Length: 486
Image (cartoon, rainbow, N blue to C red; front, side, top):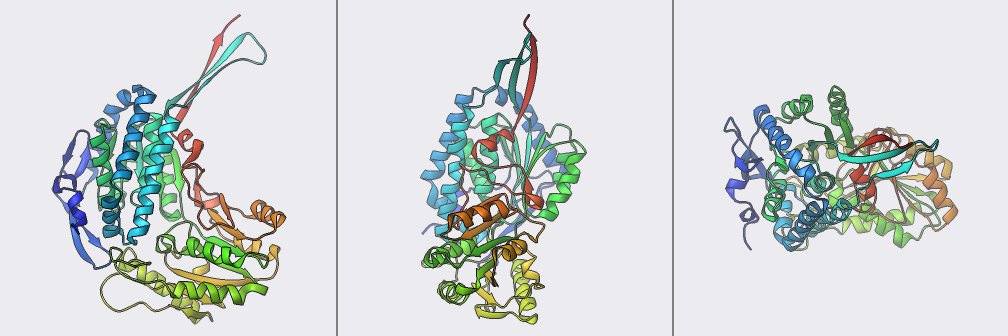
C-alpha cells in the first residue's frame, strides 16, 4: 500500500495564498505527527501575521470578481469539488487517518459527509433570492437584494479535518464570498489537500486561501482586527469561542460559532433496547468520542439500567483498539498526549468519588495516544466528567426515575448543542423535544449530522447554523431599497 503522504506533494504543504503555494515569510515550519505512533509525518509552513494579512490581501482582491461570478458557475465548481472528493475517497481518507488517528472506515465516512456539503451548497448557490413587493400602505415598492458578506475567516478544528472546513467553505463560496482558512495545527494536511483539489477543479485564485500556523492566536487576531474581514466562523471550544467573539466585536463582524457540547443521552424504560444500545454506541463512539455531539452523559431509567449497562458495556468492551490504518480496528488513537492525560484524569476523579469501572479505564502501555473504550457506573453528580466535555471513548452511566428529574439534570449545563432520547412513546418524545435546552435532538437515533439539516446549538454551544438552507444565509447580507412608484 502506498504512503498516504504521497497524495500531498511537498510543494503543497505550504501556504496557499492567492495563486501561489509559498513558504511562510519567516521560512519557519512545524511538524505534524501520526498520533498512533508519535512520529513526525510532515513539516508544513508556519505562518505569522505577515502571512495571514497576505492571505487577506488575496481574498480581498478576489472578492469582487468572485461575487460577480454567475451563480451557475459557482455551482458547477462546487459540484466538481464534490465529484473529485468522492472519486478520491480512499486517498483522502488515508491521509485523514494518518494525521488525526480515526479508523479508516470512519475517515471514509467523513469524506462522504464533507463532500456532501459541496453538493448541497452547489444546489443552494442558484437559489439565492430577493423579493419585490408592494409596500402595505401602497405608493412605493420594497426590493430586497441578497449580497455576499465579504471575505471570511474560518478557524477549523482537528477532529473532522475535511468536513469542518467543507461545512464552512461550501456555503461561503455558494454565496459569493472569498475565504481564509486556518486549520488546526494537529491536522493541517487534509485542508491543504482539499485546497489543492479545489485548485485543480478550477476555483479561481484568491477564493480559497489556507494559512497553516502554530501561532494561531496572533494570526487570527490580526485578521479579525483588519476591517476588510467581514465574517468569522469558528468550530472549537466554548472557551476559545468567547475570546474570538470579543475580538470580532471590535469590527462588528458577522459570526458563526459551533462550540462545545455536553450532550445527554436519555434511555427511557419503554425504549427498544436494541435501538438504544445501537444508538448509544454511535452517539458515544463516532470519531472515537472526539466530537462535540458525542454523548457525554448517559441517563438510563432505573427499570432498564442494569440490562442496558450490561449490553452497552459488552459492546464497548468488544471494540478493537489500534492504528487506524490497520484492518479490523474500531478505535484509533486520540489526537495527542494531552487529550489522553485529560481523559485519564477524568476517569480517576470519578473513581475517587465513588464511580465503578465496568470496562476499560486504564490506558495501555506503548507508543501512541490510545485510551480504551470505558464505561463507568455509580458516577456521582460532582464527578468532573459530568460537567466537562470528555472528548474521548468514556461513557458515564447515571440512573433516573422520572422525566422531570432527568430533564433538570440534562439541562444543568452551560452547553446546549444536542441531546438524544430513546423512547417508544411519541408524546414522551415530544415532551423531551420541547423540554431539552439544545439546538438539536436525536430521537431514537444516535447520528444527527446531515448537510441538509441546520447544525448548531443554543446557550454557550454556539451562534448560527451550518448546513441546510439556513447555512447559506449566514454568508449573505440583505440590502433593502424603497422604490417610489406613485
